[in-house]
Image (cartoon, rainbow, N blue to C red; front, side):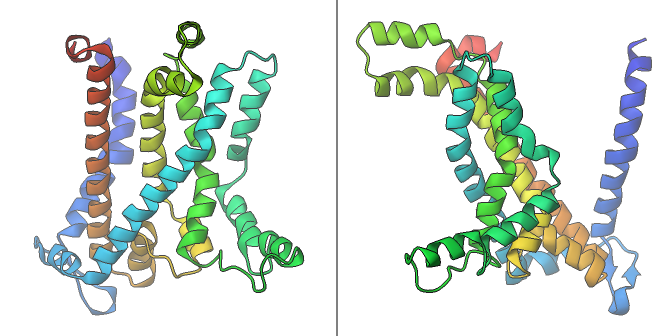
Length: 285
């Protein structure tokens, strides 16, 4: 009975994940020829070509840098919102949570085009600042790395807020009241009670946002204006424009490797956090 219940899910994973992954691994061992032809072989030459190229290393570095910056700023602006929503006892709490995640109902493409209108040289921000006399010439906020970070931060905020709210289950207002009654100032209450109890949710949100930003294509392509090169855009260009499927497959494998490193670090941080606040014996059980 258990196998019968698991069979549909396992079949779906096999068809939609395992087989395509095996195909990508096999493609990465081929070699590309002139005109987009693919020579069927079992060789690591394409891996050597990619790993020996400074351009691809720059792409990998810029991808990781984008993920780190977007994750940092997303957590920075989402944490107060998620903390407020988790602690509020207002009857409007459900409505406020719905409003916080409402942007997910809008396509990321439409939201990215909206940010293009906001960040452009003739956009809302530059028009407002020049009209107020705060700047003489428009700021370069679009078609560059800065614009991608700004737009990506807003686009991934709802994901971070949802992840943190779901991870704030350990936060008990009674603990804060007890600490305050014992004379602890608000800063100490936040540092010793609120932050440790909310760290699991923060780690989950960080993992989610980092993975999404690493694999994001639409925002770097549109906001970057072809000047921001990340692994997702490079994979598309190699596969669709240059018709170099082996190189695209190798880049996909490198992106999966980055995902693996990130998930490993997340699991270690989670175990360390559990051992720190619940004790080694309970964390390992």
